[in-house]
Image (cartoon, rainbow over all chains, first blue to last red; front, side):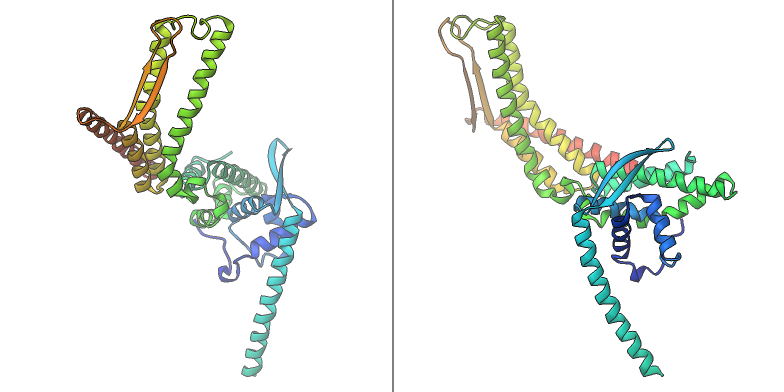
Length: 116
Length: 243
């Protein structure tokens, strides 16, 4: 079975950040989250869609997410929403992400400058 | 609606998660949500005009590689079962703790039942009569069960569970054998009053006289053989599931 994973070396922690960000806006179920990530990132970020569930379950265990079951069209969906703890964690992750992207950006710009 | 191939794949995933020490509730939950996700992806494929086989394969591919899913679940300690997180404590000390509390709890239960029977008049009030033979036999059997049989059941169950989940097998074996040894070297006696007005007596102890030693050694050998048989069964079950 081929993997849908793209640029895995940059992916550590990114799905968690994206999931928390999306779930602070509104509650969603797993399939919906994956669709939202692909739509929001213009399919630049694709993960094996099954990977989203361990992240959701772990975040819920940490108290960052809450879940509720809701019957929709004969299927029971598990909807997730960010909790106050989740929002705090998102703040930390976004700060960390900003720090990393700025650092990497500075190096990349420096390299370009040196090559020019 | 899943294809037989998908069901086999989900079954393989379930086995790998269980054997990886993931808590049962998380295995069940992950599988349920993956099933639903797969069904949604399958519906999408069919809506796009794919054949059922092509839609099923596309849905499976969207879920990602089995190794990737398993790796991501196993990387999350929050999703691991208690025995997987603390194998030494659960399998090493667990049998002893379980035996102790099960015996303590059942002791209270027996006393409660006896008091209840006395209260409703099925049994004579304390020290006003002699317990009927059936009750004496029943109580002796219960004490025998807790002192001689329950430790082996607990040890065997722990060893099977450890073997089944590939966890701390040596600790499970050590914990089981410790309980078996404690059971074999413990003594108990239950004396019922023979005269109205006398009190009964239940005594539990540890340690044996020289004459009792061969019997205890035979008992512990039998216990260890049973525990090893359980270990073999657990290992066999794990191997069969993996194949």
